[in-house]
Amino acid sequence: MSLLKNFSLVSGATLLSRVLGLVRDILFFATFGTSLIGEAFLLAFTIPNLFRRMLGEGTLSSAFIPVFANLQKPDSTVSEWKLLNQVVSRLFLFLGVLSALVALFSLASYQFNFFQTPKWHEAISLNGITFFYVIFICASAILVGALNVKKSFLAGAFSPVILNVFMILALFYVGIANRFDFSVCATILSFSVVLAGILQLFLPWYELHKRFHWKWNFNFSRSAELSEVGSLFWVGAFGAAIGQINILVSRMLAYLLDDQGAVSYLYMSARLVELPLGVFAIALSTILFPRMSSSLGKGDIKGYKSSFFRGLRMITMLTIPSAIGLFLVGDLVIKTLFEWKEFGGENVSMASEVLAIVAWT
Image 1 (cartoon, rainbow, N blue to C red):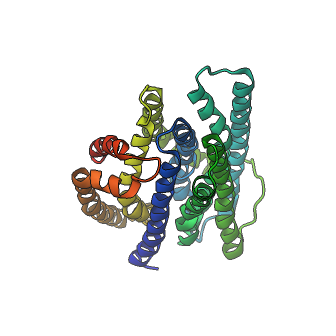
Image 2: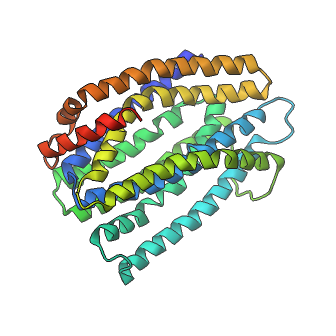
């Protein structure tokens, strides 16, 4: 399938995901507004997303794809599926233990009242649930990376759709159709995230097994290819961690402020900026990165440069006009989309000021 066709497929699926994500956010702010519980959920959900971008869709996936792509060569003597099982096995073990520890800490903080302020108590409690999402989404991202190398993009493109659908259904049930207490709403929403993660893992798992005859087994053996993935991961981990930790620290500092709503405004602004970025830039990188890795593995520097600069031109043509548009009419966008139920006119004014700054980041 050509670059344009793959780009159209992934862009279409990503556009659907972003539209559903927008619906999800509209329902979220209509349900929670800038309430304490709503902000606690946003902060709690930030932490598993940090691990997702570090150990799933971000650094680890970027390290895994080029090594996995090199194993596609006809003269390769190492099984590509062995490497996949080695990586996923270690992910399951590490994240399973880490998630259990986070859940125990959350339970202990509730029982022994580690945090005196209610806002931190709520955030820690919700994080104890949402953190389990990390296990499934990180493993799913590695499987999707393998599918992308095989030029199969559908499962990965529609994976975010699943999360948005589950959260929309949960928000509609708890916040719109049935009016529950904010705390109950946030708890149900947290469990919907974990359930979505299970299905997000199942789809690429099933496709790899059905189409490419991958057989899963726990494999904790070592290999030169696994060491190469580890080396590439640690090279990129520091830079990626800075960006993700910056997001987490920004939201935690906003959460510390006495003025309620700071986390909500930061989150909303980031989501609106990511809407055009996610549809085009991320879709394009999904297609180009396996192609660039393959070119580099074959020593085709000319093909590598051609793919890189072609993608850079397309991204620049799309993102700069988007930033200008959000800066100029951001207040109208927020008013049109989010001024509903719990999210009022004063919230629109504050969120617009934050968006005008975030649009250029």
